[in-house]
Length: 419
Image (cartoon, rainbow, N blue to C red; front, side, top):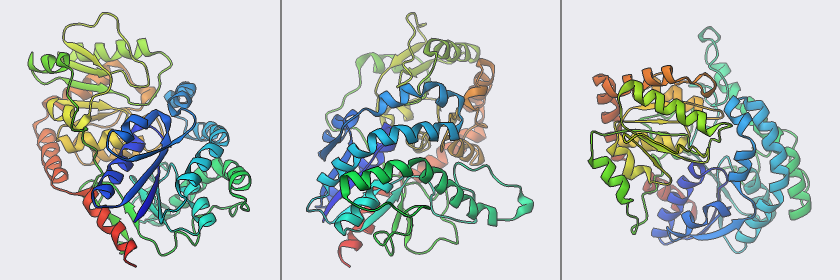
């Protein structure tokens, strides 16, 4: 089949779709991946056709540093809605060009609205592919909605998905309307969103996470597939920096600390807080600079600052991982079988932080706006010394490593081609 994948967001948002595309390509399909120029080398290094979207996701994230660090999801959505109006035309134009002559569109939260519009324009089917629950269920609430009181039963859980969908749709509705009109020549989508569009009706839905982490709810139908994670391992020619391998060999496994694409208003203060927490626990550390631009001119010999390192290589070599709770980083930590300390900023991050705690493979999450050196040190100490927690993390990692998420997802896609 000829397949287009539309992926937008941070690196952690895009990586699973690169892994999925790589698996589809290995199975003999033609795959085009539409994403921002920030990720050109990521896409092309794994042999996929890259269709660029103008603009930089990193620039947008850095412009929203204060909002992100404060964690107000509604304010972030409002800001993202304004940014979407600037970027929707570019994303739609690039996706429309990529979809010419293709047979199937694949998209998740970052590209589903654009994907639906183009699928309607070209008469193509759309396969929804997510890495966090987005289909209504009574089992648990949507990722941006607080857990309702148990006395209310399970119905509020299911209703929470309608609320979450509307929060996202209404923030992007005006951008979607402009893209439909100016690029596609289509009328506006329904006021409450295109969730029941003909292009998705009757199509399966993929969920790229482990059933050992979030079991499939009993009220989901047979057309909804929890496949296992879509992991992207390093390109074959990747080799670690000798400074990193020397550091790892020079002492006991360190603690990894990194907040990915989450920008910081004061990177120096954040770096100082991390160093203070590591010193309190006596742990060696690896700090990932990330989009937050964390920098420290005079690091102690027990700490190494790194830029991009594949988590699949690094995390099995550390004692614990401290991160923001993005879906990609969370899955990498769980796969490695080491405890996680989650410091969520916004969006789906609190959901993953709570899931880590509920599974017993990490301490309770620490919201970014409540992060202190003392709290971080206490959490790190628990993560590196609690034997039961470490065993649970190791056992879960073994289960995840035994799964073939990409292979399972490819099998579902290929059934579409045989209909």
